[in-house]
Image 1 (cartoon, rainbow, N blue to C red):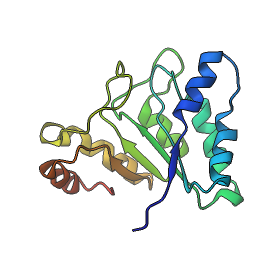
Image 2: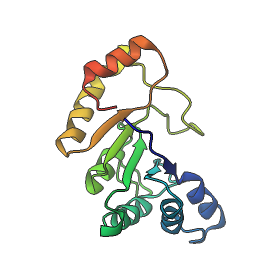
Image 3: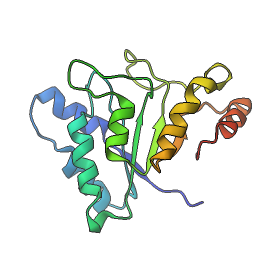
Length: 164
């Protein structure tokens, strides 16, 4: 398996959102990354929408559906238990299934966390997580887990049937 560069665009969205404007454009940043050699685009939409917003996800999915970007992977990261919010966030699983990215990386982050700082503890979580993994795979979405480098946890991830 060769290593591929997928650029996370969350900080571009954070800067844009802090200015309450449309600049810088997440979509334009994606084009710049691809033109510079990136083979993938990654986003992590959160329920509080402090970074990537659902509209960014839809626009990036539309961009990456173009013929000239057919080889560029789209990866959406997030917590599969994050549900819909009053602010317009549709819920993580709903958002992912609406756009069907190449890959979905499931992350066990709490809505109040500033950044993702730990992986899944599958010893107690695998029974709850398994239906989410299967649901994504039924939509032909490759599933990856955000994991800590703990051998027993990696073995449990393999048992779950995730792709990465």
